[in-house]
Structures are given as C-alpha cells and as structure tokens.
View 1 (cartoon, protein in one colour):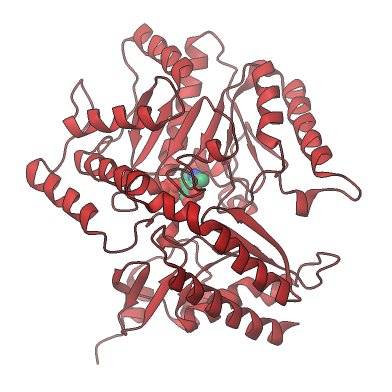
View 2 (view 1 turned 45 degrees about the vertical axis):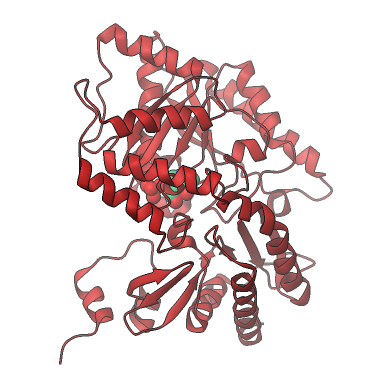
Length: 452
Ligand code: PLP
C-alpha cells in the first residue's frame, strides 16, 4: 500500500517552526492548489487560509495577472544576476518603482532572496558604512523583545524570541528593548502615554550606557507580526525617533509584513506617521509568488553607503539571484495589483468590519482578553481570567488547540503565544470574512469549554 502524503512528508521532509508531536498525531496538511483565499489539501478538503500562507499570499492563490507576468518574463528572459555592473531591465524598473512608492524623495535599492537576508544585508551595510567612516566600534544593533526579523544568524539575533537560545543566539552586540505592548507590559497605574515615555527613556539610557558611538542602528516592525500582532503604543515611533535622531542612529523600518497594504497604506510607517531611514521589504513585495527581499535606502544612507563603496571601489556583497528578473517582473505587477487594482483599497474598506466582527467575538467570550491590530492583521489574546489578564497554563497549549480546531473546521489561522492571529489575503470578501468569524468562534467556544 502506498504511504500517505502525510507519512511521506514526515519521513522525508523536515518541518520548520512546527509543534512536532501535534503534527505527528494529526498529520501535516499537504496542499495542492487554491483559489482566491482558499487552499485544497490532497484529501480534497478546502480551507480558508486566514494566514495568507505566511502573511504573503496577499492576492490569493490563483491570481491570473501575477502568474501571467511571471510566465511572460520566464519566456522573455528567465534569470540573471546583479553583479559586475550588469542587471536586468526589470531590476532597473523595479528599483525606480520602489523608490517612487517609498516615503523617500530619492534612494537606492538592494535585492535579496528573503526578509531575513534583507535584514542581514542591512546590518552588514551599517557595519560597512560605520567602519568606512572611521567608526568600526559602531556595531551594536538595537531591536525589541518579541520582534521577528528572520532566521539567519544575524537576523535571528535581532529577533527577540527565547526560542533562539537553542542556537546559542543572540550573538554578542544585539540588544533587545522592551516590547511596546501596553496591554501586557504597561505597569499598574501607568497611562499609555507614560508607558511610551518610559520606553523612550529606556532607549536613551541604553544608548548612554552602551555609548552612542557603539550603536549601529535601530530596527523595528511598525506592527510586530510574528511577535503576535502588536501595534505600537500611542506615540511610540515619534518618541523613539526623537531619541534616535538626537544620537544620530539610523532607524530601519522592517516592513516585511506591514509593507504594501497590510496595514491599509503602502507602508506601516505611513500608518504610524514616521519616516525611517531605510525600509526592509519582502513577502508582499511579490505577493508571495517569488522569494525576494529588498533593502530600500533613503537619501542620506544611500549617499553615505555610495561614498563608502566608492572609497574601496566596491560593495562586496550580493546573492546569485539578487534582483532576479522574474522576481522583479512579478513585484512590478504585484505593486500595481495591490496598490492600483483595489486590493489595498479592499483592506481599507473592510478593516473596520474585521475589527467589529472580532470585537463581537471578544465581547461574547469570557476568555478573550484583548483584540489588537490594524488593517488586515489582527490577534485575539486568550486569557484564563479577563480582569486580571491571567494567561492559561502553558501546558494546555490553548492557542495551538484553537488553531487545530479551526483546521478541522476548514480555517487556517495561526497560534502565536496565547494569541490567535488572523491576517487574510487582501481579496477577502464580506461573505468569506463571515465564514472566518463563524469558524473561529465555533473553535473558540469548543476549546474554552474543554480547558476553562
Ligand atoms: N521580518 C519580518 C517582519 C518578518 O515577519 C519576517 C518573516 O516572517 C522576516 C523578516 C523574515 O523573512 P523571511 O522568512 O523571508 O526570511
């Protein structure tokens, strides 16, 4: 008898970021195709993917225009690099486009294959730049607890999650500041404004303690994604940026999740009203159809990096597939589709409906303590006791159980800590949104009845 797809997956593939006992018990979900926001598994079951794959399949799973753009470019010119003063016409056009849609008056773009590599590249750029300017000690990187910036050794060191300890990470010189989650980390009697000011003070004290001449840069996601969808506390980025400017420390906005429509605007920094020095993009950049990341440098850093590179006559960094023409052609089409063909508009139009629906679910439940999010990225935080915000015992794996029950019901959503995250594709309709609410609420009711 031939082995099942699930058994073959267990035997020959290694799962990343997966609760292994649960997968071995339940079987992996092996998907074959999709339409709109739905995916189908090998057994013929259909799921509404409220994760957009991994936040990235923002135009759904069968967008014809994107597939045609990819096919047309594969037919025209299927691959090239961006080394030795050569690059494809598509690469040139995408860089122009990215600078045009960025908040920068001018700038430069460098391409990678992933978000992790884009962050890693940016750290190397900062080290290169400060070294070239005679400040080789400016190597420390500031990020936040609960941040997610990727999995390479450098970007995992930036990620503020305890799970990286198993790799002996973070490396030295990566400093994690307090996560700006007021509901969870605000102190007794502290207003949201006071909380924000406390975090700005912590940043300044850290800079003074370490020495401003040792800090290379500050990285932040506008809304923390894989940390559990955590929007900043009120005024956070304005308060933080004031301190960074005082000490002349570059601010990098990691927009791998927030970029291109997820928060309702082109950029998360636009939604939270700040202009960083650099934007990191990936995921939505190609609507998930091609592995690609981009470092978009604003005017000041692109000039300084250019000068640093000219000093030694090169910037010795790059990936074989940097600026891949097919990736660039897809990204050009994805930007058009998301920004000009109504997808970001759909996020803006339906975000209040999504918030209201999830708020209703929270209000009807004794065990949802917080709803947080913006645009099409939301999280519901499960708590044992609402008034005291007491979490469930970790051994109960409440959010995993909720996500597993949702999977049984044909809804894919993601457990993160004790929260359930919903970040559907931008093409979601009202009817599909109602299906998401209905399945989610059924799963919550069932699981809370079991554990409470
Ligand atoms: N930065 C952020 C904000 C992310 O959410 C992610 C991935 O989820 C990354 C970086 C890493 O991107 P990749 O998985 O493409 O390496």
